[in-house]
Length: 290
Image 1 (cartoon, helix red, strand yellow):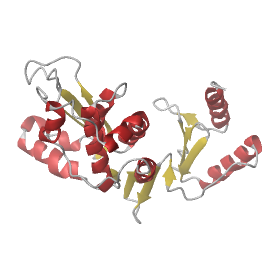
Image 2: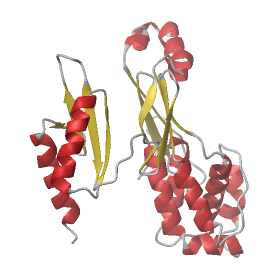
Image 3: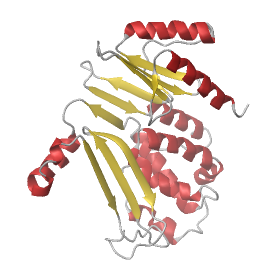
Image 4: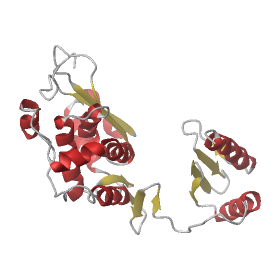
């Protein structure tokens, strides 16, 4: 039973490649087919037994559907217009120039789950500052509140859901979630205060997500263009399709060892596609070393 997903993946891969789809070299769950003569294409993304099929080749999609019914039976469930996949909600403008991806459904389900056992959360602003956690740092022995005790019992479940949300569409919560998860084995008051702040922020910012825009985006207009105009060595920056930004703070006072936090984000044609935030393993002695 434990190996059944792996075995089904091998079966599905053989089935799709036999139909003419090619497995991606960078993402083993994605299969593509592109007709160079007509320009039409089809993409199939698999997550165990859930498939997302999209493209411009309607004829091949119909052939694929018939082949799947013949191979796997008539009990398959089909949805023609997909708006949500694996908890992610996708919307697009009428001209198809902008696609927005959010985890609204996942976050709503999370609050339904935890609000039954803890007091209601209310909206909270962000970003956070060190002063927001000063009391938790200075008085770690303060007894936990009723809500904090309830969150402690569900700590791994709540942070597990938030990790999925953070790595898919919510880079804005990556840093504070990273700090929450440092207490996964035995959450202390500080970790629970961080989690409370994070849940309060998500309560009023459920629809924040990724935007993929076919036109010029904010990062191109407000960051890339000014940099290319100001610095001669970056004059060709605005002509490049890829942009990566990285930074690190120095001597983070929220960490007992004053370790820094590193982060980076990668944009492709002005749209965010990758990000990361991680506490460094050693204490930096200077901003350059951080």
